[in-house]
Amino acid sequence: AAVGWAIVASRSAKPQRRGLSRLAWGQFWLVVANGIIGGITVLTELNPWTVAGHFILASTLLTVTAVTWLRAREGDAEPRPLVGRPVKQLVIGLAVFAGALVVVGTAVTGSG
Picture 1 (cartoon, one colour):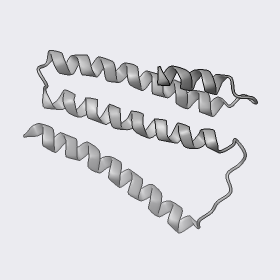
Picture 2: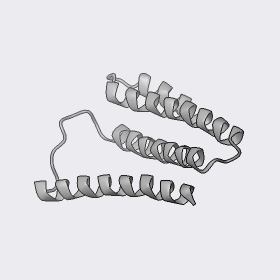
Picture 3: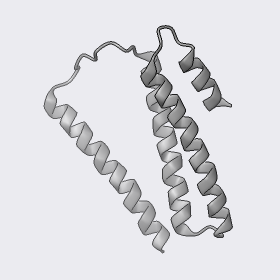
Picture 4: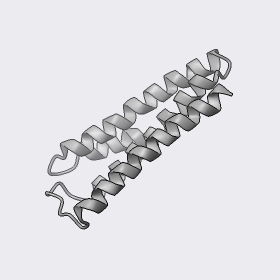
């Protein structure tokens, strides 16, 4: 229901915010994918690989939801940088590293 409201709210925003609508629809498709992989997880009797996939999809859904919330509070104007280029590059590197760590961590945990 919450994802449905996010889609309705993003579609009814004036002026239209295409990026916000895409993020809301992304949440919908992540919920659908999570439901499918959750069903497969049950059918495979909690196979560690499907459990890991289910966890990663759920983490992705939380990330997209947080980004949607932040973008809804901002505007669609051109962003103005608040930090220098080195800090921005460091944050991107840390985010990529953290994402890889989550994926590798779930794979290692799933392998026993």
